[in-house]
Length: 255
Image (cartoon, rainbow, N blue to C red; front, side, top):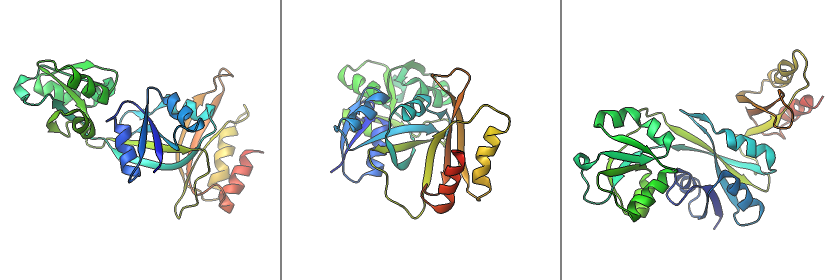
């Protein structure tokens, strides 16, 4: 049975991603994203479940920075449909609620719903953490927004499910490990590179893929922490890095 580290407390959406990817696994909750990497590197977990991008909120910038600082491999990709649920202590009715606690991003993704219901959004450090804390210390008139797993773990009742304002709400995760992943029939490769500072440098780099008909899936730039006004590029493309055309393209980046 593999052991998987994730950021948050039990019942976090990241734990739902673990359950979606692994039929059976032990979990290691970590207070920070850095803890995900440390658990894998120190042998406390076999893999780490790292959120990398949300379809509404965009990239998780800290996750990209940590990928650069640590030498872990992307073993798999997980796409989780995020369904926000309004929940409260057993016996609570919708008309009893005055305020709702959750992570600021979850509150923002349910802003119109809360406005229609006349509910005040109260920021909390974590979605599952808000469920855990409410279960431990019930507050009259207070509900939380969290996962269905959190409701189950902490004995809260779901008042309404799927309350997010936009249904196209997905979070993309990387499963991180120490070893390279096995070859798959359909592979995707993620890499980080930089360029020399001269006209056409990025154009020439991307041309290595275009000339070989390699489909790019995403590109994003981030500042280099140790070199002001220079940038790293995070790139996803279809194919395995050991495929002949992909390998040649990567060699072209080194020139």
